[in-house]
Length: 565
Picture 1: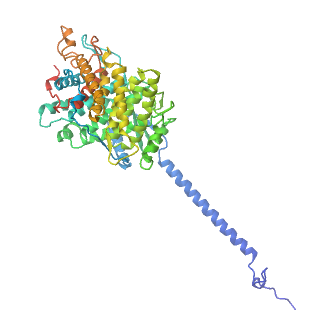
Picture 2 (picture 1 turned 120 degrees about the vertical axis):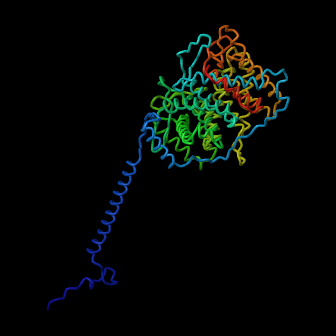
Picture 3 (picture 1 turned 180 degrees about the horizontal axis):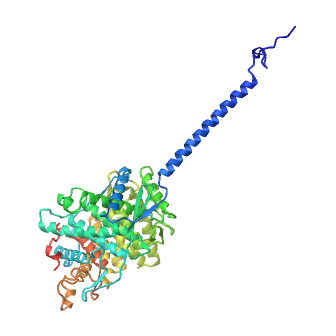
């Protein structure tokens, strides 16, 4: 009898519990699951690689460098429109700190002023400023930069030049424009005429420095710009600081509720937006030239700028400040030079450090860059330690401290006169006020500014704000009085060295009344009129008019001074 073959369902399981599953079928099913999983993972991997490649090639990962084309060309129009579109899509700059300028009183106690017979008057200061403005305008070249030095007795112009002093003259003209705008009367024909003349010259200077002689770096939608003064291979970072300062003053003067005449005839909204964009590009380059963030490649510049912006809203004040506050000998300054490719190098320069610090402080305080405030404070502390504390330990009349003096004093004045809408324990403005006054006393008593045979107009860019702070804080009336007497004596002497103010021109019998008018000599006997000497003294004159002799609040709109004879 033939035996029936058992089906698989009838084969007992190993544990005797019932029918068993076929081992062959179980292995086959497991292999299919593994194979499907592997295929799925492979497809996901291919998709991820494809996405990464797409993203990689859709983003420009290399820094592009190019020169801006001429403004009137179609290429310029295309690039300008493309840049505006990128900026429109970009996130606005963060504003994490609620700060506002502190307005100082214009009422000063009598015992804060010099008790001797006054040597200065508001009329004298007004005339000096008007003449100095005329000189700057007369000695601007058709390209937009300035005659570096002019001998007013021979009519000879020197062939020497220096980019940072040229940039300083641009800043000086912008300061004058800002001073004019504060008292501009659109119903006064003289005001209209003079303001128009100054605005045309100033915009020509911006065209020369920022548009015609600059290079542009682009990386992943972010743009930076740096100045390339003609004939120079290694450029000073101080030039970037001074051109940025000029733009800050111009944008402050043309912001807010300006008269329609200014918008329609002088500075259109389009032009102002263009200059705002250029300031942002310059500041990005300037900030990324700080020694706290070493630049090994151009890409490092952009990483530094992007990290600063992205961290502004979530990093604490102290974390941001400490990054730039280096009280040792190794850092906390701005790299002194940059080359034609935009790479920074060099050690610290007290002049350049002060110029760059002032630019960042003013941009943070008055424009949309208040996220830079912790950086400005940390850098100010670091630079004071380097150029004041340590330098004066080596030499009580340090040339390094002198170079830092007026720039740091102006920055400390701005830092001492700022308020937070909410009380912030991490910021102490009185520290900077103390530094400001102490440095002024050093300039007067140790450096001996009144006994110097050369022009010291730069010194009063720091002494005048120091007096204003000391007089309004009421902490030391004797100090305030001492500084005020220095201002009276020192500035009266310097104004007498200005051509047209009644002294130096009397020694030239055949003077025609026009050559060199308004320029300032470097000493009583030197007929050379250097552009930076006049610029520094005009700024000191503006400060004296604003802070020491604020009344009447007008500008000397004498149009005959601004007409070529």
